[in-house]
Length: 429
Image 1 (cartoon, rainbow, N blue to C red):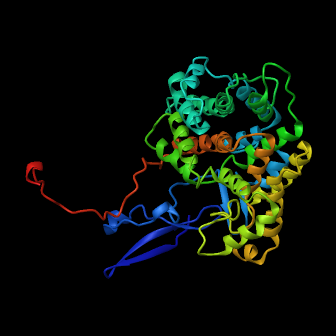
Image 2: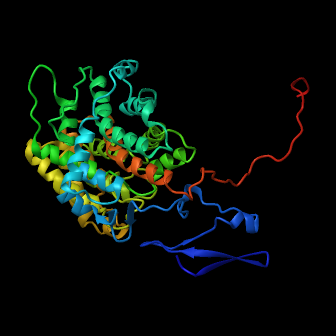
Image 3: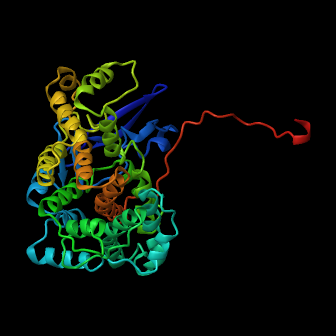
């Protein structure tokens, strides 16, 4: 908090508003009394200059290429930690002790099974349903199966709901995939770690034993970690807005899944891989790079640059190394799509146009390559993103519920429609 004041003058009258400082990052002008004082609202489409909440969970400095979870750099967590440890950190605020982690991990592991009646729920979808449609429906339907964790006024029920969501979302996503390809569901096992369990539920079949590659499991764990939270983005803000009405947690997370589905948000890595396939071969790259530089051409290189990061996406650095490890493990370095990606990456890091525009490869560029190499179809990419982001959504939701200053969301508008008109009977029109 500071004692600085911002002054606003309207029609000769001056108004004062306090300037508030956080622990790091830009200061904010507190305009909560703006309408009461002036009779005016602010106009900020997309809320790009509006702080909607206080949060102590995630911090981004786009100019410096910094991403912090509870103050810890994402690079350190991705390299030294695990997804479940990061999940504990986001939920609780501190890294766990060995005993705390063992208890948390054990709790999550023993919540991974779904209510057996949910099998019928999955079977109600068409086989060609998009996995995100199934995930959105299944997460929302959890409120119909787990009544003992929907009372948001009970701290214990909020904790149980958070654990259930984090534990069951891999099963939901894996079953959405299995259903789409006509294979039987594979149930979770308590002797596997979080990422390995997910991979096994996706790729194992009853006819033979399935052994999870430690390299692939580590890559999956890193993807989960890197996507766990990302400040007040579209889907997180959607979860908070839904939660501000005191909706149950499962409905709020389902709303986040729906928001994430959009290609401008969670579907970016899917769009990136589709672009790489459209390019097809390395010899066609100059043509597409030229098109990307042509302002009159609507073509855009997906997976380069980021709305938030005006520097190198810190998550991309980790994913770049992970991609190399995965491709070497699977022996697919000669895949045409992957060759296009590697050459396009090289050009982007050396070409003056890309450097000047700061169009560095972002996390979506590399994560799409990794997921494709592992064997996931592109329509599964966003569902996997939703799996990872569920821990961030639940952390943000819990923080919002516990914030005494939080009110139900009620954005304002600049009305440009018709003014008062008189109704004319349809027979006279």
